[in-house]
Length: 477
Ligand code: ADP
Ligand code: MG
Image (tube, rainbow, N blue to C red):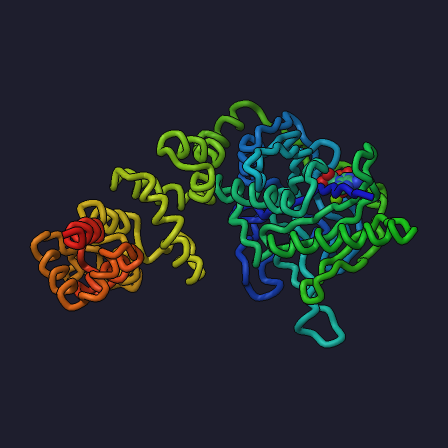
């Protein structure tokens, strides 16, 4: 039997506001426990929530970025449940009327095809506090700093058919929220978390299978692994004659498996009802206009433009638009050097590798865009060869100055004087008569040996094209 995987994701992303969604308490991360929650966040008697306008602005901006309808009128509802990290007994969320309606994003599949994934809705809500299990023996600590932090919950259609597609979609949403400044997307700090709904069905079956929901996944790698494990598990259950139980599961990264957490509560267990403390949220065209006026060129548009304007491959264009800073960096180097392809090669090659190795983001790259452009210019005007340029790059990275400084200090200037190169070649041919004879006898592989000798003698500084041409000429003689 062939099984088809079906995945729908719920992504919680923390909105980049300075204060909470319904109070003036700060949202900064990492403060001492229980120093960032006020009476409103705890829902103490006698206080009233007041909606943070900036949170609405960010939600609207996100909605526009995914081509969604913005609801003219949406409602805040209370989702009632008891949990120690939710002392007020309910979470303010949106239920029947979310602020952002149906939208869509496009993902790039491995085979180069583009697939559209539907977004069902995105709604505003407040976060709960946090239960701390690790630092306490036999006890659970409660930190309410996070209570009332604004979240946007982005719910997808069950449109994904593999763990890879789920990761591509999640990366896309992550890229968009950071790109437009809606969220910092910091996954370690919990600002971007994913619940994965997973089911399987026989290939060709129209009806969806019973799903499980894996909660709170905070890395792309874990997302892929958790889904892969869960798909295998569900297939095993069904092929073993059993039935998948609709439930919430946890991914245990250490064990590499998902485990049952609780069977899924029926939605109506939450006794949703409109929050009587909050008026309906009414959004007019003016508000939308203001919220989106500073909208930057979006990732998809920029990727297409990079491809068309600079003649890049889809692959290069995709890599260079992973985030806005990287795209900005690329454009500066491409413009400065007038060679967009070479600029792309250096950024996606040497620079990406160095950043990756050092665990750095482009924004703090030790090699700035003008510095990289300066290096590329010295390749273009043949001051240094492409090979030596890697050495120069490393020196710039290590703080030895810009390309010209490094080239001068290390005496790396390329030798392009034909006479000088010829002299070196003649010396080498004279001291290696046996190899010369072999070459002239038809053993062309020996050519590489001569190139190596010349490069060694010139400490890699001889212009490689000239070395090749002159060697051929001399060997023919
Ligand atoms: P709930 O209200 O319980 O959260 P929803 O119907 O809103 O459930 O769906 C939540 C998420 O689960 C959505 O992203 C949706 O696409 C996904 N989903 C629903 N049914 C399935 C299924 N059978 N298999 C996989 N994902 C599903
Ligand atoms: Mg849900």
